[in-house]
Image (cartoon, rainbow, N blue to C red; front, side, top):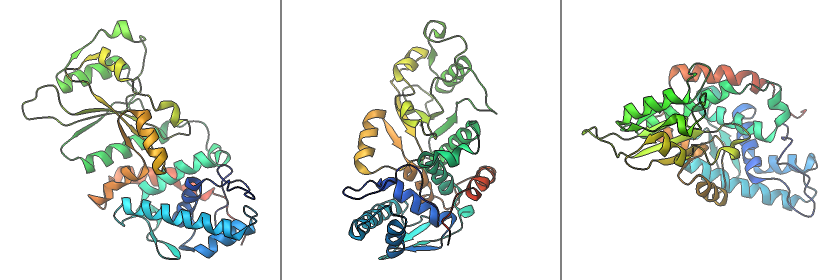
Amino acid sequence: MLQFPTSGFAKSVDADNVELVAFCDWIEANLLFDEIRLSKSDLVDVLCDENLYEDQDMASAKVNDAWTELRRRQSCLNNRACFLVGVGRITNTRPWQEDPAHAFCILLALAKWNREWAQQFGEDYNEQGELFELLTKESMETQFPDWSIHQTGWARTHAVKLARVVKEIAERLGESQGDLSRWAEPNANESGLDLLCYRPFSDNRVGVPLYLLQCASGVNWKSKLKTPDIDDWMKFIQFAAKPRKAFATPFAFLDPEFIRYCGNVGGLLLDRYRLLAAVNHKEKWISVGLRKRIIAWAKPRVKALSRFES
């Protein structure tokens, strides 16, 4: 069984100090990377044996709450998740290599809860960010087949400046460019825009459904909730109709958090389970190339996960 992360898990005596989202992410990680199945009693035992809880009833209550949340997560994927929640047991349904999108998102979540483990792999997050952009793009293309999803963000293989991005977007949408020299730094990058998502009409005219999407896969994701800045982009491009914001992240949220972050974004919020819901439309929705890249990225990280001694 995987060791507890260093964040989100604190000793609970008079009050419960284990974060439910962190606990559920840890259970999912166990099922993906270490265990075939886990029972409620297994989880209560490890919570008490590792001295996170002194009161078994408090530990049991936490496990019951996790069961409810994991059932909700499973239902988002129409029971096509890589785990199956039973009455008293949760079971792995396939190896993580057969569900690389889910494994990738869980590893990104573990980096949030266990910084020391994540920092073993350095501070260069360009590849991680690029992979998450591509995963978001392919998920959107699967779920919205009549939309155009265009990658605009800077990456190692796609290093472009804002002026080029603005020109390309304006030409795609048939819009007019604004005075970029007045409103942006000369060497600015993409200004918080990673994916352009729009639904064209056959008349090829402006004023289409349009989202400017930011992908945030790192632990500093909250600092990006306000990006891209729509007011800035209205200056960069003279949109006939104001675009909306969208924000994608590999993390999972309880309902109150999800509602709050939707308000912070002021637009469309794509969390882990909205991204993974592409499986509801197509079972093998990730391209072969992206699948291989994610598995290669994930393998050393899975191997480095710490486990309890049996």
